Image (cartoon, rainbow over all chains, first blue to last red; front, side, top):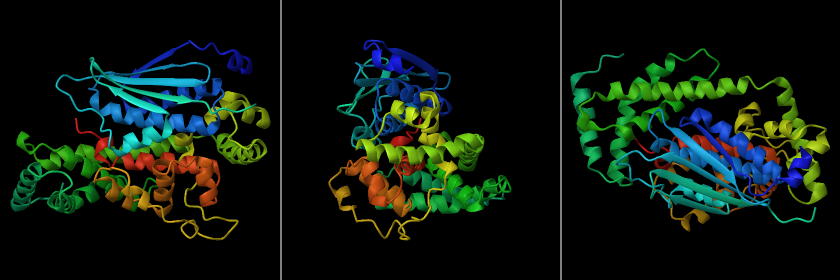
Length: 136
Length: 258
């Protein structure tokens, strides 16, 4: 496993789809931690990412109808993790996450960049975090 | 359910009609909301009572039920003609059940994993000192003689937070955390926040509020906060996870009405 972390191919993307139900957010959290660990993030950075994924999911879930899914893709280079979390947009739902809100502030503190996109048929939140530079 | 009088129902209806016309954040909006909360506390009490005797303090259940009530008030659409208590009941019960589910989940954390939490905190402290930075999962796994999976599992703060009491007083200094804190609320003034944040924060414990401010307003790292509060980084991690979870139920932008 440690070997895999060292050679971890940069362009491999992991896709994950779970029911749009808060009970499944823990699955996203665990995958996030695991993939960040493969990229050799520190535990503090990993914890930030876990909380960020929690927060992003909490922002998105109210927009999903019952029976819909919460999708996530995890990509990025060897030193960065890009997490895209999305739910299908219900017709007539044009509420975007409030970028002045507290949840947004939390996300911005945890990730390097946070963007949201509601132009398509999905509401998408994208988080990027780079591993801290260090000699070892 | 309790026999609600006709005038109570009419008053509730009146309040909701008024609430619907009021902008959020105005004093009158808060007033009307507060009156609605007050008049429906008997309902929360009634529902919470059904869950007593399961190992959770009644006060906690009331508090959680009140969160459910608040959500119901914010989501209720008076023009649909539904009785509010009918609408609110599943919300309140749902919130209490969710709490039990979360706790139950915690209780099932294996004993070995709980012991691991303690070793983990020590290992993180040792390694952080030696490396001068937060360790990676791999470094931790090597240090503790575990697989990375085991370490990842053990470090999931949201899963672990209630396995250890949050409000442990600082054993080494004998000081309460509140004593050792510096006022950092002024930072709030520079951040454009929703009106709802202040009341929500006010409802938090001193330590929770400070940790949140330091992390998300002042952008301190968990290690820095740990140092400031005189607790371990693992402790800060749990504190943040727990507090965000609590806040999510209270802040409108984290719980958008559907």
